Length: 277
Image 1 (tube, rainbow, N blue to C red):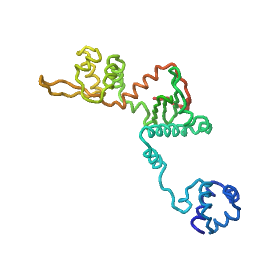
Image 2 (cartoon, helix red, strand yellow):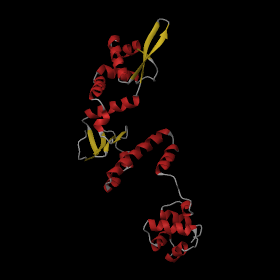
Image 3 (cartoon, rainbow, N blue to C red):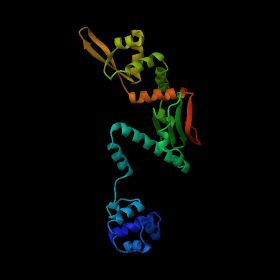
Image 4 (cartoon, helix red, strand yellow):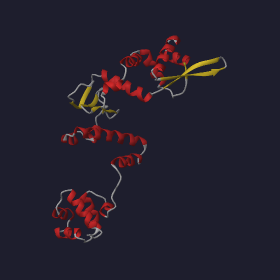
């Protein structure tokens, strides 16, 4: 048996296609397919047709197996486009992978990539997809003008154990419950991450310097700001830079999501039979 004949048979059998069916797909007789699989070699014009019918590359028909994993292929595809397009592709893959976890046949047909790319922003309406499973949770905003994706497999010891001390969480939440703290965050995020003096922060946010200093200290304590000293002609002054912004920014948007009343739950699955904590 020739290499190509063996490959044709292997891929034909793996796809549960008969010799007759393969012949019909590429316009040859059953006898021709049988001849190839017994050692004959297809003509050059037939090889691409065979590869297409079997869903493989021509290299694979010649025994040059593709050893790349799906992860390798996804990485190669994302790296082949500019960054804006790459971000879009990453969201598509996250969405497709999360839907596959649900393992419902109708989902693939009814909630595809093209559809979620056309969920237009309308009168402040937010389109959200969520699932809560025994194995983990997902939360995604799908509006075409602004998307985000949060995916969390459940830790082996459960969610509660991974959250740590409730008192520490309460201290963090107290910062975000203060409107002046939020004003400071909003101001600092309009600037590049360069050191800012307390006097500038207080002036631009219209918060008294003494109060701003207390708030900045509290934000430093919970690691969303960093404090350092800068030497000037008049001595040392304190300066601040923001920190952990890739955690704080999602936190702010999820907090906004909690308060939204104009939402469409566009794909929600609750299939959990145990408590969250």
